[in-house]
Image (cartoon, rainbow, N blue to C red):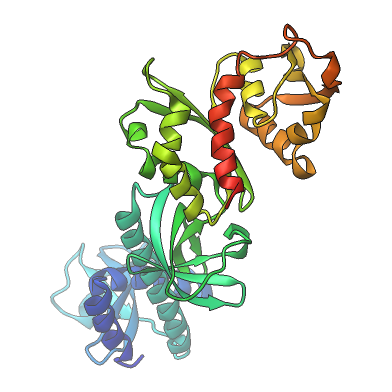
Length: 370
């Protein structure tokens, strides 16, 4: 093999910081495996590299008084024919490089070098992004390749795949987006960041940026259900009695939730007050619809909910979206039915959560107006 390989290893060491010795050790192991696979099993062989780039294979035998295994041993008498200084216990090496080994060596070297580069790039990426998985990152659109969007994240190239995009996002080169880092994955092209604009985690991270009380532990996220680009419902609770979790997330004049809506390009957001009582939680989750009554069936993990007839379509939502998101958020099946408005008395109305729902309705209206 020519010295081109060693020149390449020098370049890799300089540009990517991958030690040439580490690559050569990996290459030696691979060449030994390739030799044994193609030319038969030899118990002990060694690989040597000449200064001009040639790769040689040597069989190794131990000098003994009496040979019992000709594959691994040589008599001291025969060894001294090669070199008079040999003693029992010394190792004698014989070159066994096949004439056709050059092609195999070149192919193996190419595979090992590229594999080691991929491993080094993954190690670098893991070191750099360790702890940033399931978190947010700032990205710049560099190129749009058919339906995939090529992103630059702190100098690291990433691809926003079609299934991780939001249909209402109109990506343009040079624009900045916040993305959710799902994981570091491997592929035939090496390690890469899997990022998303449609993941529910993006909504959580955006609220964490806007609401300092979340980082302080005053406000807790209890759940998110999302249909990306259309609508999200989030459930929040407060760990401090005098702090309103819904109002805190909405922010003064609705600015906090509005900033999240703007980053999500107009996606509607319902902020729901969490409750350990499934009846209250499901009732809140169906906001902006009012609930007349609710029956909880724990064995079936189901809630039978009655709403005013005039609000049935509101409770169901467009194409069933509102009730679907509410069910996902709460984890309870929801069986909706209605009661004529003129049959609803004050005692039948579920007023316990309607005031709580007013704040989440404000948040939904903010989203609706975008």
